[in-house]
Length: 335
Image (tube, rainbow, N blue to C red; front, side, top):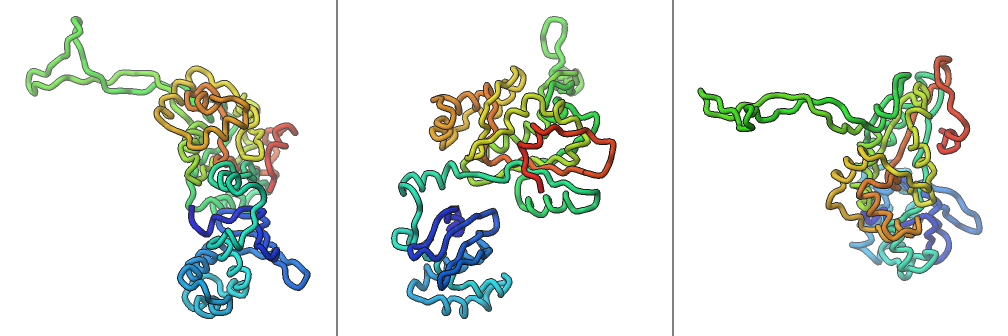
């Protein structure tokens, strides 16, 4: 984890003037106090990183020194350097947490939460509006540089095309004679190959994102599943029993695990073979089961991990769209 990303929501300076109100991939939302009043400031993590590096090399310098020496060296908007006192305080909270940082709860427990089970928001969002209002562009900008899997719903979309199913594929196999022996080409003396039709489980957008998210869990990396035109398909038909997984707890994991079907189970067990989840004990505790993570890695249970973000766009103008029921709607944040 980068130094500039180590502050957590709720952290505050020892003098009580700086409180971390919120954070995202790029910025902190900081409540800053002065002379009995508070203001809300947005502080870029990149800029905080500059101040952290500066004070690591110059621990005795003052805020004004940092402002003067750094303002000519960065491409970041210069107005942010007007927050040099706030940035200085935040940098010292990172560099000297023992004396400069107050973190609620037991320090060891807080450290564990930072590395593993963070409280997570914004996991499921629907950006809605009329055509051409920038819904897709907004998502594209917000997920720039992240791992993204994108799909588009339409009237013919169904569970199989969203999750996965067995499909016929061609594969190259060795040609054998009626006795089971390999057929050898007399001219080239090479084994003769032929293409045959076989059936194989082929994952689609949801399962691809699901697998990638679990593989990234513990690395602070996010996985995005973007659904364009979510109301052009029949969501009840497309999501099926996955609908249950959309209820998430405060740490971002599904509240209610579901049982995977046998075909999906075989595929997931193969994909997760040999993989270890570093914070499996904390995840197991969420479900009161000692082996929940093992069941997930074997493909027997489905649980959305905390780093899987499902964002969608919705067109609110056209008439030829499928209605979305209230039970489905309440599981999303609307933008």
